[in-house]
Length: 117
Length: 113
Image 1 (cartoon, rainbow over the protein chains, first blue to last red):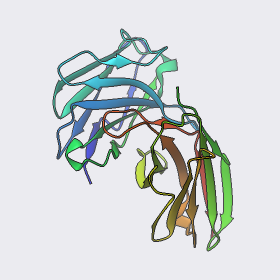
Image 2 (cartoon, chains in turn brown, green):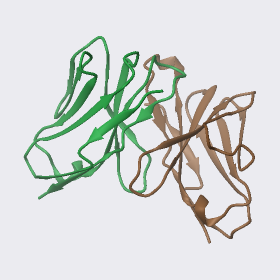
Image 3 (tube, each protein chain N blue to C red):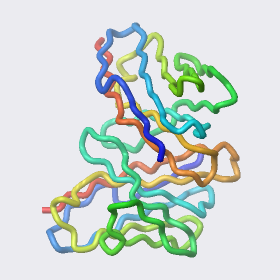
């Protein structure tokens, strides 16, 4: 199946700093990628839909100025958590579909665990 | 919007027994229902999916059933093994490519050896 790679897999930062998480589709092109956040023992909550070459679409309640998304190419989307605070500590997961497969299957990255001190 | 409920939240079975996880959805327009397995510290992995034009699908020890009238679908794992222990999520979406998935709350499955 298609492979989605995230980097870094875990990051620890100080409060007030910004952290960038990368999501890459390794063997396919993705015009759309999805960013999820998952708190411990909870389900995945969609944060935003990243669109190549245009602005991301954010879900209700997600601050677009807090979580900057850039989808600069067909294989890369980045999520930047700006001025991170402890409450932003979470597991961030991206996903994408390989449209060429025609199955609609959503492939997930391995996730990035952010800990803000 | 779509709402997906998943039960039970935790499930403990003995190795070799079967495990069943059930989900209900609210939007009758939903027609794609995947199941994901998530191991600790990793991203979800698709294990099986079903579309609304079929009522059942099987892949070795894993099967999924769909009842469109009642708007519920279930995951069945037979002959469970310790490596089946993980968190399982059901999801639903309308259409295929480009449409977002709505996830259930997850089920933590523990298979005791």
